[in-house]
Amino acid sequence: MGENRKQKRCPNLVQVQPYLDDLLPSQETTAFETHLPGCPECQKAIETYGGLDDVLEEAAQAPLPECDLDRVLQNLLDIPEPTVRRRTWWPLPAFATVAAAAAVLFFLVWAPGQRSKSPKPKEAPSAIVPTQFTQPVLVTYLAGQVSGPSAKKNKWVLARGIQTEVYKQAALAFRLGDRISVAVFGDSRLTVERKQDKAWLVDLKKGALAARLHPNRKEPFRVKVPFGLVEATGTAFSVTIAKEEAFIQLREGSLKVSSQDGAFEYIKAPAIVGLSRTAVRQATAEDLADQTLLARAARMDPFEKGALGWIFMTSQPEVAQIWQGEDLLGNTPLLFARPAGRLQAMVKATDRVEELIRINIEPGRLIERHFELEPAPKQQPALPEKDPLARFRKLLAARKTKKAIKGLKSYLGRKPQEHKANLLLADAYRLAGRSQKALGIYRRVAADTRDARLAEAALFQVGVLQLEVIKVPQEALKTFLYLRRNYPKGLLRHEVAYNLAESYMATKDFHRARRALEDYLRLFPYGTKVKQAKKVLKILEEKGWK
Image: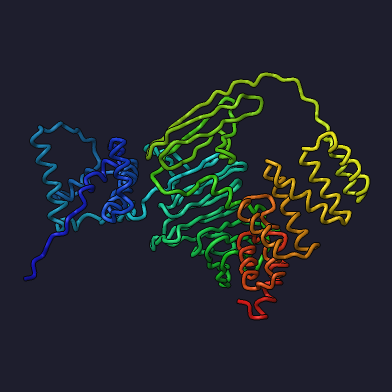
């Protein structure tokens, strides 16, 4: 009964061309962009029609070929070539003009055999690029002087195949599709290309970049440097070009790194390698000019899901800082993209009154905002306050614990609730060898203070005393577990993680000790205890604790 059923086409296909031409209303645009990620048929239509405007613009701007009308008429009418003489042209009636044009068209299209007397023109190279490679490279962050990006149809895009220059103190971020985000930093030069195998290639001539990739992407991604090639199978890495080699820092996933001479290595995160023309070698954090590239890239482009909208900010004075919470987004003039929603930020400048801004970001729209910051009222310079505890800190640094204890007791007699002074008194008792006295004061400070940093410092000293001096590892383990749970972003989180592993070792729980050491190396690959952690981990492996 082989009955062929026609496959139903997506009803949203009729919206593809109006969407590309920015003719859809705002609500329909949002609905279509929500539908697009889950519809392969609409995605294919976007790829097919996406580059048509660029092709038509290039064709319209191309110069017309010269036409030798005498030669055309000779070939058509088979007349001998005339002698050179002045010719007078008379206007033909409209019907005759149309008839002549029809005859020329008929001859050119339907009678190719009659053109043998005309020399065959050279074929011009085709200007049409396969449509699957014409998707725009969307700019998601632009600060400072950068050559290459341009505004087009309410979006900022980066031309492919054309050199882009990111000057000093500038920064640029862009998306390659919706699954690759690249950030480029000051004093860099690069070109973005799309290869025939649909691979994205960033040709980095100089400077530094950071790339973050969705793990389920399909398109290959490569970074070419003067010394070789980096092929990404990972999800987060940075590349910095130095004088004689490039340094690759891999935070997540894996990479294939190849030199010009054919040497290559597969590396897994976390790792740092150096790439020269002849070899791939292990490197260290000290080789990196900047270890914060990936963190800066995350602030420039959070790489969140959703249709993007653009904001372009200028200010008076010309340079002002844009802050979102505790993160500095950049200095004006500043362009950045974010998913649709409400943005709240602060505009700050020296000697100016700060201004709080709220902007509704719309998908596929470019919003421009200019801010005039008023001059701040002049204030009398405040005299620097003397630190009353500085004298006691100097005494402790010199290990003059008796004088420090005597002075701190006198000070606390006047200000008994001064938690910083109590913490210094506990430090003095600890240095003097009076551990139990110090332990009691540390615990009181941790319980009474509302300053999270003081509480964390006091509890950390409690754990260290329990582990190393009083020798009660079970109590130390409880203290460090409490610190890890209640202060996950504390200033002492590195030390807490390592001391937690030592507490497990002291309680002979080697299985959990191994896991704690692995967590430390994964979370803090550049921590101060990395060498010790690797050494202990190796010993545990040799003893069979896997």
